[in-house]
Image (cartoon, rainbow over all chains, first blue to last red):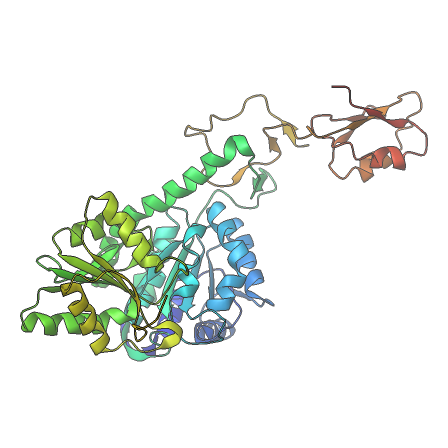
Length: 388
Length: 98
């Protein structure tokens, strides 16, 4: 293990180096570029024995790794924002084919207005395409997820592609201290990928076949079952990870002072660190505040969210996303989960950080004040006077 | 081996269901010719076995049969390319009678 001062992109590149995919194919886009640059340097310098396939677009990048994965190879791609949307046609293809591809997505705003800074509207718009979606809160978790994602995705009972999300700039470009594991440790944790579905001239197989009305449901139900089984795979993989690397993770969510909390803020990604500080500060002034960080959006942590907020007086989902015409996508998911658990408490949806705007400590404190007054509905931070 | 329709199809709700979209090559489970309006009919007296129809069929539904050819009506879509290609007037398109 080496302590290194590295950015989120660089940390992720180290995670991928340690996982040693046979094929890497990606197209550069801000703020993902550095992860691809570092990996292409590692391939050029012979640090990793991977084929780096240059392509002319993100659509081709994902198509390329789908082909490689279908031929039985461990693969990696990375993108962001418009690039992820350009891949959109291929995302369900990868999931339906049950190809355990790993992708890093650098979360970035979606045009128009054109903007290169971070929010979650790119990945959350692709929740339904059948990929596992995890959200890191710092560079270390990004690196660790790079390793764990292969272990989870490649399990035969899961066999589902995995998208690891890092907040654009806040994580991808921010330098912090991170532990970079040794290759020997990584090899103990992550065995080589093997699948029966390879290209074999002696026993040829149809890959990516069609299934008509009679059989289509069975395949789609199977895809859902694989993604749902990843819940258990996440927990078991984190236990194995902890045994080798010493770092512990907490499953699909991470609770902070939730057990006796009256007011719980629910977040995704890098903003959670600041929210944790605010919760600590509010606790000192006597408010029973709590923070629930969603580490995974798919599979959605239905039981974990319901259990965490069951004793709360009200909740607020703070997210960098809006599903125009309704509410934030995280909020919609959270509300569906707690409704089915029979929990009926005021729920507010705070939309912030769009196009990279800072979410301040004051914004987060205000969210807790709003929860205390039982406020509900969708509010854009700084746009409280917006007439709808 | 040519892809062909199987009589023994896996139980789609059991463990025999493939868990991804990969399976033994050429394993066809449903016919695919329901919209055919006209069908190619081979006059075996005129057929010389030149295989032009076999080469041009876009769906691979014409096969060698001895020194002649035969059509797999479970998958032929009735496009008529084979009849257009035949120089020996051995293929004609007939209306489907339903």
